Image (cartoon, rainbow, N blue to C red; front, side, top):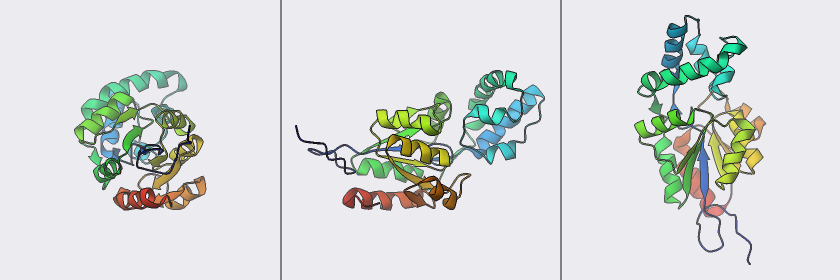
Length: 220
């Protein structure tokens, strides 16, 4: 049986189909206004001060990491439940698609590939965001962060993973996927390169042209 040609794109005879994974928060969507509103609602509900601006400046890690800054350890699990209950009413409408997000997903499809979303966010809320912003993914996998993202990326055969955080770079590298980083989140371009990103773009508006070149040549 002939070996599989793993060059990007195509999906033709002997070629592995292109699957590109995307992170969600600060990669495809600017969820800071919505998350800030959700934290403010949680603060109002509990009477516990939360610096919502500070919290939204360090998006990426799982929710429980941020909640641990504001609540004692024994209350974090309870606060996760409350936050996620508040989230749909407060966070979906204010959130916007980042520039180039829809075009980036469309570029993957134009190349004959699949676009999946792998995120640390609560999966039902991730789906609400994508539906509201009319960003259509072939699969959405939530509750995964850093190394754990590699599990979903491998399971879906992703050869490229696009994210804004060093945790996304780690997940891509653990999965054996090319890490394409966008400097639209809390991590700057130099930090993303140091973490091992194979490609660093200013934002997703540059992604379609980069993908077209990568699919055509295999050159990063």
